Length: 376
Image (tube, rainbow, N blue to C red; front, side, top):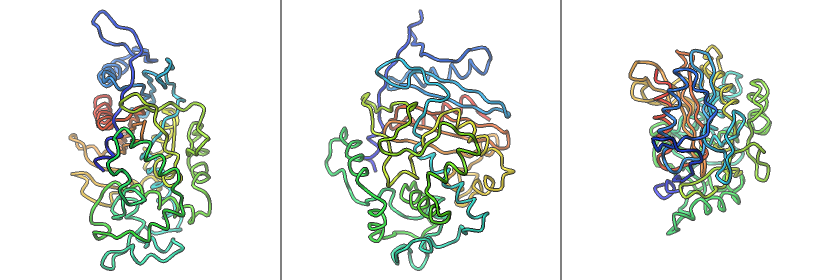
């Protein structure tokens, strides 16, 4: 995993003009008409000073009102200011869509969070339990399944040059199919009781997506359209597919300014391959802020840990802020994109930040940026 983190480092450029102070002014559509506009501008200015930045789009809901801001460029080879319709990889924020679908399936009486996942698998997997305790749907959604973070579960890097890791990942996962995942799942050996340890797990999210396809007897792409894209009028939201990238999609880069492959791999599509715009993510945030919706409410209920210290709901991180407000959040990081979304349902407020570059520190910096702009 340490080697894997090496791929999340990246460099971008700074197109703009220098003021008399010598500071870089990034292209932006921020009109600087209000105190809130100025706060966003100051905060983003600090974020963009890192020499790897390319562009960022921000969507804010504050007390029910919506705001959109864009900075930088959607690509390095020419100046192209992002818009509210520029599309970015959401990476692991994709997992929150699956969690919401699981909550719907539970409320539709099609599934139970305590169901043994083997109930939904066609082959026998006696190995998917530990001392008689099986992996449940709840475990898949709250990061406590004990499954490997990646499949295939082996060192695919060896002594590879760190610069080659993104391309090595792409070559391996482009050729890794759903059938390969089910085959290799037979070899998994759990090392702890499911439900006892929480850790990031792409495999669990992907498997949950496959199970949901079986529960609803439909493809994940169609489920995304049926329950999110059409009802929420999300016109810029797609499940990425090899060779069919959206025309309005930004280019993603690493720390050295190299354009990165997108995660459109079959074995991670439902875990990390939804792409969307800041405009559409405002609609998704508004949906997630409405906890009168039983599906949303269920997906936000803590299922592991203590909310005072940080708990996990259904693929959402839930905790209390210093002011005692409840926050619900998720980060996302791919080979060339970083994202962050945090909701404050009690305040009807939230913020999403979408950036087309990725390094080891970018996600944490997006968290700090969100806190500066929308601290409850």
